Length: 118
Image (cartoon, rainbow, N blue to C red; front, side, top):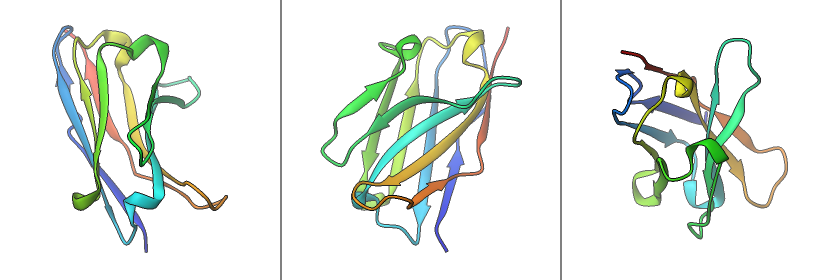
């Protein structure tokens, strides 16, 4: 059974940093485009950042220059480095893996809470 397990969510002050990690099991990350999504209360889940196996990245406009997504296929892990955090970054962050060739093979983690507040 495929599992994606996120960690690293926490309470941070505005301007602070956090690093999220997502480890996959029973899944070969190199076959997947990996992404981080977030969902705040009352707001639709949105894509924050994604990375292909060729390391091509894509970022939501509000996080460009502050967040960095990276992956380590050998460790089956994807990371999200978040710097200069803002209160509007507060949300549950979800890891996502989407098969790069086969439609329908998409997996989600359980989410990790990020709260930015002074």
